[in-house]
Length: 225
Image (cartoon, rainbow, N blue to C red; front, side, top):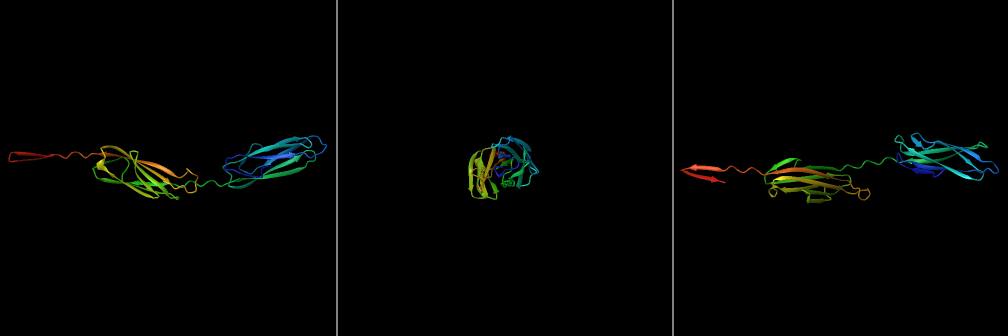
């Protein structure tokens, strides 16, 4: 029975081949009955088969074995019992199927944003600090902050990144702050580092014009603007 051992995750079919040679000399075609004994929780494309083999000839049959989600991780034995029809000779051949533990879930990339709330209406011409903090077990490779799709701040190998917005330089209107965070690669394959992007929208509102101050005295009107 070949191969002697194989590995596969739940739902993965592996094929095992049983090959028989009829060594009976001068006998007619011999029938060989095969019965597969597979572990609980596995499925197979066949549980039995019959091979009629001439003297000195060889024949094979394949069994496709698949573990279901009820199978526990570990090494599981597979046995095929063979019975020869002329002498009633019985023989068993075996192999193993190794089901590895399921992969650990990916570590979570945690990102917090503060300083400007999503949907906030901001009035005034001062400054506002937009802060991003991030954490991941493998560490943080970079934090990028974009204002209306223009990158305005990059923090490398840091878990805390702040961009100060000068509101006096912004016209009234809608704005978006995009935060892009990438964790270190760790032990993952190239291109598989944890990453994510978040958007905060806000509206810059110009303050209303000041009311003119009118002073009337001694028949003189003065308007201050």
